[in-house]
Length: 259
Image (tube, rainbow, N blue to C red):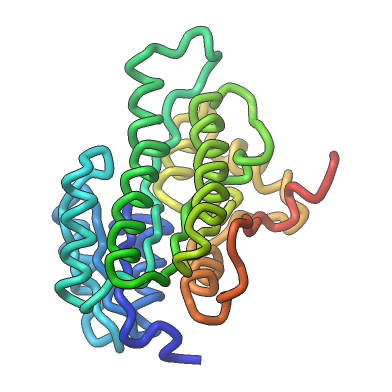
């Protein structure tokens, strides 16, 4: 059904690659005005070109979620372009260092936290300010991970931040329900994105690493970003108006199994 986001203004962070890019395009396909915040100007320009001709539109803003002013600017840009902010998709994130926690440096820890958790805080903060100023209403979708609920070996900083993102989302849902603002967290499994491709590329045998990862999923493959973007579309649309304070696993049944 087309037009599920017609007339709505949305900010998507980390919008130039992977899940963020697919989400921005999908929302524009359904009529939204999307402000895509990202660090790479060339990728941002190609995102705008790819969105040409869609029912909605995508406008790129170069910025970094670690900079509160950049996040605030994206929200203001959305309100100027669309007339209001209806949804925030706090997607920007990095994997960070791989290895034992006792070998993780303070700088590595801070980088992952600044992007994944502090960045989500800035996104939520300025979305809430805008939505309340508009009179209430709106949807915030954060992007956690299956590691918001579980753990994998030797990516403790990433796991800690994604667990924090889920907790932050639940707190917002409770605290701002009276304002008509909903908050939910999407927990994807592994996706075919530049992040996972870089992970495979760093392994001694990339093909074997991919086969091993795919084999852990009951569905026997990784997710396409569009499959996860569809879940985000549901949560920012008016089809989910009684859904708040929860998480939505999009993981091919991975966390449903024991072995």
